[in-house]
Each structure stands twice: as C-alpha cells, then as structure tokens.
Picture 1 (cartoon, one colour):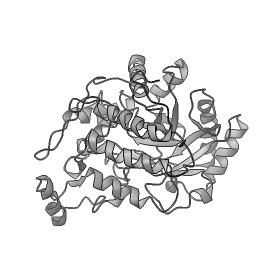
Picture 2 (cartoon, one colour):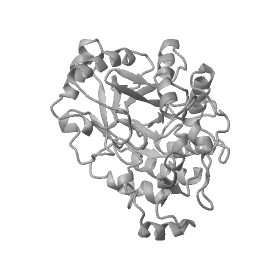
Picture 3 (cartoon, rainbow, N blue to C red):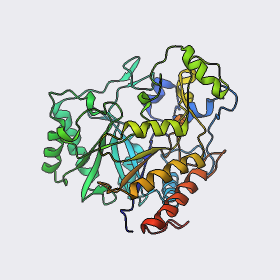
Length: 375
C-alpha cells in the first residue's frame, strides 16, 4: 500500500552565537550554552546537565557547524529545518545564521521559517514581566515584513507545499484583531513577486481559534502544549504537585514533573478535535532556564521517543494527511533538554531511532529507505 511519505522538519534554534543585545541583557558572551553548561540535577535521577557530544559547544557563525548539522540531519532522515525567526517591528535578532545560509547557498538543505512573535522577557516563557524587547504590530510593519520574506521565499531550498512557501506564525492570537495581518501578508508577498504563502498557525496558545476561518491554510499540533498538563502553567507552590513529584523522588512543591509518554499522549488527545499538521516533542526539561520552576519530563530516552513516533506514523499511514509535513521539536533546544542532536548520555540514539522507525514503518507503506549516508 502506497501512503504519502512524511517530510520530517525539525525546529531549529539560532541562539548559539553572541549578539550585542544578549551581551547587554545577560552578560558578555551569553549564548544558549551559558544556561546549558550551568545546569545541575535537582533531584535523584534527574538528567542534567545535557552536554553536547559529536558537534560540541558549537558557534553558529561557523559555516562548518551548519554543514555538519545538515549532514547529520540528512543522514538520519530529517528532511529540513524550521528556523525560528525573530522580527520586532523591523528589527531582527539572532538572524546571522540564516543570513549566512542565504548568502552562501550552504548548506544545501531545505528550510522554512517560523516567526516566533513573542515579547522577550527575563521570565523566558513570554510573560510580559521584566521586558527586554516588546513585540508590537502595525499594518506598515506587516508590509515591511512581507517584503523581507519575499526575498527569503525565493531561495530554491525553501520548503513548499504544493509549490507555496511555508510560513509558520507562532502566536497569531497576540496580533490585534483590527490589523488584517493575513490579508496584508498575502497581498504584499504577491506584490513583491512571491508565490502565495502556505500559512500555518501554531495552535498551542489558543487551540480553539478558527485559524482556517481567518485565512490560514492549516494549523500545527505544536508540542509541547504545557497548558494541557496538570498545574503546568502554575508557578505557585502546591502540595498536590509535591505528592505527585514523589513518584520521581522529588519533594519539591515547585518543580513540575511529568512522564514523557503520558504527557505527549495527553497533548495529542487535546489536539484530536480537527485536522492538524502533526508534530512530536523529542523531550523536555527547561530547568536550565527556569530553575525550581522548571517543567521536566521524566523517562525521556530514544526508545520512548521511538515508540510514540512509531504509533503516530502508523496512524499517519492509515489516514490521508492533508500535507506531507511532520514536525519534530526540536533539533537543538538544548536549554529545554529537547534535542535530536547527540549528547553525551544517548549519543546518536535519538537520530538513529528516528531513522530506524521511519524505515520500519516505511516498509509497510512503500516509502524509500533512508540509508546511513542520507540517500
């Protein structure tokens, strides 16, 4: 039986190089590695710190690093990266890796963009407290944004659906209703010579919103959806939480501990009311950023990831997916303990499990096999 083959697109963070703004806000030389390297275990059997293996503590200003990432991804069945894109009323942050990918034409690896349109604050989860840079909106800015995007979309490596460049918007619900953002983006992109975009809404923050009704082509079943988890978004001390944490050997009233498979299954169930582009979370532990207020998934390992992926791919094969996109979160979210990239505990385990499961399920559905050389 021939079934549409999925394209695995991995979320990609560009934060692994210094910028003047982070120097000012967090200290000279700050990058994502700063929090990663300072992390410590907070209870027995807590896996921290996550330390990189094959690629080391890399700097994304180096083209050799970006080439090595693409080769590693290609060899294990990842079909492209979705770069997080930070645009604040015409000001871009952390854009150098993408700019150099565009300028050099290397690596020759597919990519698309997700506009992570959140206010930056020192709370790390987007709350408007201790604001570092505010996300603001205007019709003029959407026109300027579309003009810039048209140039990116023209790149031959850009990921498309039915010939249309994919553009993901992370938090559309935060855009004022009086701004016709979707209409402006479509009109301005066309005016600047771009093909019509394939617009995808991340549904984690307002899953009940009729995204398709307001002009999106599709919605992404983004993981993690932390609001699905019991007390997941509540930072107050909780005895109920402490009792649940005993399962993991922690007596903390603050830490939010969950079992990986149970958590991602709950997220999947919450997203089952209408068609969505699927995604799967690799793992999660944001305690390097949030300390004793962190959210930590236990039993994260390549085997657990592979079991969930296998079930979801078999489900994919029994349906008629509306696109061939399947997102994996994430490629290199190291400060959230969420990475396909190899670490010192599991090595290449997650990537090898991805290729193994993809090939095993693919035998049933007629997908070409991914070889160890990426072909």
